[in-house]
Image 1 (cartoon, rainbow, N blue to C red):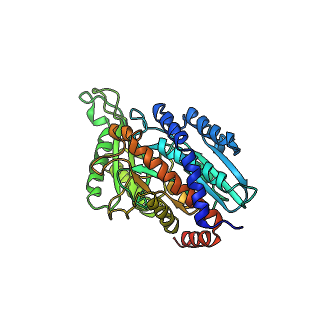
Image 2: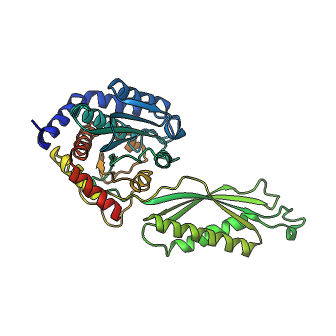
Image 3: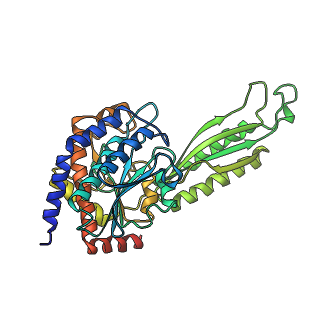
Length: 393
């Protein structure tokens, strides 16, 4: 007798319910032991160990990253990936709720594999451990290494202060701008000096003017990383680090070119020379798979958690899930664990990530992820629609 979607969803929810206490324990353990970008050794060991004990085939150190891993149940296509983030913020711990993301991805993968055992269902469930979302771009590295090449959908959720079905995530990158001048004594021979710091300061001024006419979603934020060595020496070298964001990757490329033009113009005006080089992995803007996000939202609503469309013109930062969304249909809904008057990346949000509300959201989101994953595996029509819309983006 062929199982109906309702019976499959019921089986998945039962599997999640049975694991509820264990998943919350994982979330609390990660919360109490924060680790940072590319150094999440205990977190990766905990999560991959749970999957290995459940019969998943685990590969550690994927894409050349010691704290990245994949864990597979089943084989071949169709294939659905459940993503786990587990890096924390220095000084703030899990103030972005990655402990909940990791536990939900883990629970969803375990539940789907148990409800749809490989010997009865074609395809595979792939749990993907993705380090360094907060800085380093583990998913971007995994994309380039081919981790998602044979995947039909990539699913995750993110705790937040809004409950939104779609994630308005911008493209983001950081650039290092260095100015080279010539050292001199500021009073003894000032005319022989070329002030590199003056060049850098002028770049900040030019970018401030530029910022007033950038399109919605675009901005530049910079800091001085080197401004000289002593007050009695005209700085021969100055350096700044600039974070660039834009609503789309194309707009980010345009903004990057404007930064180069501004730096070259300032250098010409100040007699310095400028070097502009990329300092980080580029995060692409997120391309939402609407058909899969609608499935997730419908499953989450059954648990009593409704999702709304995002507020127009409001952006929630950037993430390397954007890079994944360039390759496969992907979702990244937000589910609130505190009120809209709060903010992530704060001590209050870190506290909320271990609260009773966080536990409720964890279980509900895990069920919705698992049910959506089951839909991807069982419905060829859903996969075809998701891929058709993805290719049309």
